[in-house]
Image (cartoon, rainbow, N blue to C red; front, side, top):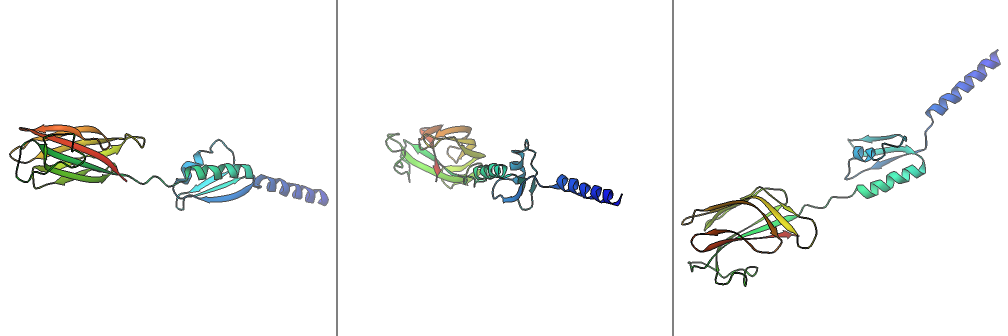
Length: 208
């Protein structure tokens, strides 16, 4: 009877060991850029134990070598540094056919496109994408501001969108312009007119 009890005890311990036995090696992956909890969801259909630590952004994986390799490959694919935010430069030019004190020749990017015009005033704003901007001047262009700017996809012929653009002029022409505009990079575009013979021209570019 005693021998039967010992055999039963040893068998019970063996079953208990099998119940908690690991299904493979355990590894800890430290992520730099991607949230470990989000990456864990990619493998939710697998039954291998996975846990994430938000404090240290660590993903702990228990499983066979093949599964570990899949997780490691996913980390190499997704845990990459994001692209740095780009800067946008917006230039607003007030040009006129009228000779005024202090007027200047047109800048190179406008020269040849607006014959007979001279530069009366200008403002240039440089800002990161998605951020608002505002600039004030002492001459004819009193204020230029906008809510935000974004860059269209691609590297060539990019379109830069300016949201909530407002241009305020000083006396004698106190007119203002409010609009949303899409500008092709480095291509001047007339965005408004001033009395009696002035034009508002905008040029946008991505400042690398």
